[in-house]
Every structure is written in structure tokens, then in C-alpha cells.
Image 1 (tube, rainbow, N blue to C red):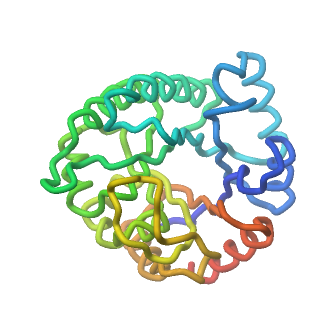
Image 2 (tube, rainbow, N blue to C red; image 1 turned 180 degrees about the vertical axis):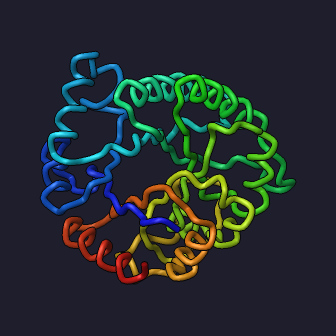
Length: 269
């Protein structure tokens, strides 16, 4: 594995956009990601000049914008009532990524396969096909972050999709919180991993009834049940070349936790 670039999601600082960018620079992070679904960074709120200004500000802080986050809770890929809205909003974020020279858009997904049969859900398959085709025309990678579909099911889904612009955003903590085993997903999926979210969690019981009701919970890195040694060994063996974005979504002291997480990862590497 080449040198792993350890970055941070600026939203986890909970300081707002510009102060979050400044804090990332002060802490000597170089790779960053940020959410662009709502608020001042939503595509509808950023004019062409606004996009250029934001890109200059990021570069001026010595930062590289490696990914935009397009998480849309409540708009499920497998729900025919909301999928069109999700797809259209996602396409606009991909356009934003193209305009700002950001290589990756990442988003959490709900279930992608049938709970009992394990077969791909047609609505999700069709939606990601549309997103993937559009991403391909823009030269962007769309990294999905599943938590309910582990291992062979997810690999079979991506094989059925057959879209090179759709990659995997590996979030091992999200998988652990639903009772899935991240390492069980790695062997067949390693060549598809586009982005890594590094965080930790306690294990929960797999629940497909509600994608967002997890019995596990996030912890500081190294204090949960994610097999960090096994994870980084697998990434090293596969010569993973993407970014490692630190996340701390549930903390009263995110800055301290993110600094400690970086130290933990540097020791592991």
C-alpha cells in the first residue's frame, strides 16, 4: 500500500464551513470531505462564482477536497416513492463535484438486496445505474457506503450493476453497528474500494426493518469492535490507494478525538 493520506470530514468539527476548513488546516490535515446536501453548500445555493470562491478558499488553506458527501436520510434507493428525488439531487452534487474538481461523491445507502433471497433490489439497481452513467460522463466516482448488505450479497449487487463509476465507500463502523462483518466484505470487494471512512463502534444486531435504527454505537477509534489491525492489513495487501477519512459523528470533544484517531492510525501504519 502506498502512503495512506489521512484526512477528515470538516462537518465533524461542528464549526461551520469556513471555520471547519481553518480548523482542519490548523491540525495539519490535508485531505478533507464535506457534506453538500443542505445549507450553504447545497448545489442550488452555490453559483458558479460561489463554487470558484469556495475552491480557492479550500486551496488557500493548503487543503485538498477529496470527496463530497451526499447522504440523504429518508430518501431510500429502494423506495419507489422517493428514489427519483434522490437520484436527481445526487446528479446535481455530481455536477458540483465536477465543477470543483472533486474526484469522489460518497453516500450512505439503505438495503440494496432482498432481505431473504439476497437478490438485488430492482429499484436500487436501476437508480444506481442512472447515477453511475451520469457520474461516468462527468469523470466522477460515486462511492456507496452500505451497512446492511455485507460480503457476497454486496459483491453480487455490484457485479449485477456492472458500472465502473460506482465504487465502495467502506465504513466499517456502520457495518459493525448493524451486525455485519466488514472484513468478510473485503476479499471480493477490495478492487472496488474508492474511499475509507475510519471510525470505530460497538457491534449491534443486524436490523433491516429500519436502516437508521442501530443497536450499536460509535466510539473513539480503538475503543470499539472494529478490527483495525485486520482492516489495515487487508488494505495494505491489496495496495489500496484511496484516502482514509477520519469520522467522529457522535462526540462532545470531536477535535481531541480526531487528533487521537490520527495518532492511532499512524501507529497502526
